[in-house]
Length: 391
Length: 168
Image (cartoon, rainbow over all chains, first blue to last red; front, side, top):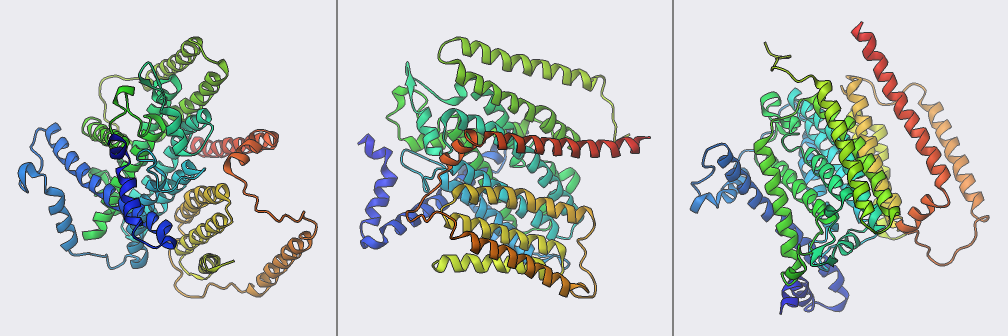
C-alpha cells in the first residue's frame, strides 16, 4: 500500500499508457511526464506567489491579499485572469519580434531544467549521465532572453536592467558551478539520480545528506547565495530595483508577456531550489530512517517549498546591495571560498574514514571564513553612517 | 541522416546566414546564437552529450553574451541608415572563404581512409571523458588552465591600469 503511494504517479502513467498500442507507449509516457511537469510546477508557482504576498505582508505589518476567496487564497486565479485580459502594449520603437520572443524563450528554457530533476523515487523525466551539465546549460541560456527583453524594449531602464542582470548572472554562475562541483567530486557522477541515491543511506537513523559534512555545509551556503543572485531575488534584485530602474528589463512588458516573465522567474526559483535540494538536502530521501514510509515525492516538494519560504524570508529581511558591493562579494569572497571548499573536499576524500577529517576540514573552513570576514570588515572602516551619493 | 538531421542542419545554416546577412548587429548576434544552438543539437544527435551541453553552456551562455556586450559597449547597435551588408571587397572575401573551405574539406576527405574503420557504435560517455581528462590528459588540461589563468590575470591588469590613469 505504502509502496504504491510512493510510486502512485508512475503506476498512473503506466495505467494510462497501457491503453495505447505498443509502438506509441514510450512516446506517450514521455508526453505524460511533460504534462506532469507543465501542470505541477506552475501550480507551485501560484502557491509560491500567494505565500510570498501573504508572508511579505505579515513581515511589513499589513494583511496581504484578503479579498478573493477565504483569506485571499484565490488571489492567483484573479491575477491570472487579470493578466490574460489586460491589453498587450508593445512600444512603438520596440523591436517587435525580439520583444515577443524574449518571454517565450525564457519560459521554455526555465521548463527544460525540470526535465532532469528527480522529484521522487524513479520519478525523473530524462535520466542521463550528464544531467547536471544539462541543467547548467539550460540555466546559462536564460541570460540571452533577459538581454533580448532589455534590448528590444528600446528603453534605457530596460537596457540598464538587462546589463545589470547579465553581469550579475555571469558573475554568480561561477560560484554556483564551483559549489556544485564538490558534490560531483564526492559522488563521482554527474547524474542527479545517482547523487540522490548516494545520499539515501542512513547511519543510526540519520541520513547521509551532503549538507551534514563540513564541505557540504560550506558548499550549501555558497550555493544558496549564488542561487539567490542567479534568480535575481532580493537582496540581489538590482536588475529590477524599482527605486532605480522602474522594473528593470521587463519595464515595457504588460499583460500576458509580463505574466510569462513572472512565471519564468518563479520557475527559475523553483528549479534552482529543486537542484539545491537534490545536491545538498538529499533530494527525495526522508530526513529520518523512521520516516521512510512517507512517499518520496512529498519529501522533495516539501524541501523545495521550504527553500522558497526561506527565500521569501530573506527578501523580507535584507536590504538591497549596491552594484560594487555585489561584484566585490562575488569575486572577492564567494569564489575564493568555493575554491577553498574544493580543496577541503579533496582533503576529506583522501584522509579516509575517522574523526580526524571532521576536525581538520571544519577547522580549515571556519578559520579561513573568520579571518576573511574579519579582514574584509576591517578594510571597510565601519563608522557612523555617511552618505556618499546623496546629500 | 534522417529528417531530424536535415531540420537541425537547416536551422544551423539559416542562423549562420542570418548572422551574416542581417543589418542590425544585435540581430546578427542573436542569429549567431541560433547557429550555436543548432551545432549543439547536432552534437547531441551524434550522442556526444558532453560536447553538446558544453557547447550550449559556453557558446549560448557565455560567448553570445560577450559578443552582445561588446556590440553594446562599442555603440555598434544602431542600424546603418543606408547601404547593404556587403563591403566593396566581398568578392575577394568570398574567394578566400571558399579556398579555406576547400582546403578543410580536402583535408577531412583525405584523412578518412587513414582512420581505423570502426563498425560498432562507440559512445564516449561523460564518465569516460572525465576519466581521460583527469588521468591520461591531465598535463595538457593543466597547461590550458594555466594559459586561461594568465589570460584572466592579464585582463584584470589591463582594467586596473586604466582605472589608475583616471584617478590621476
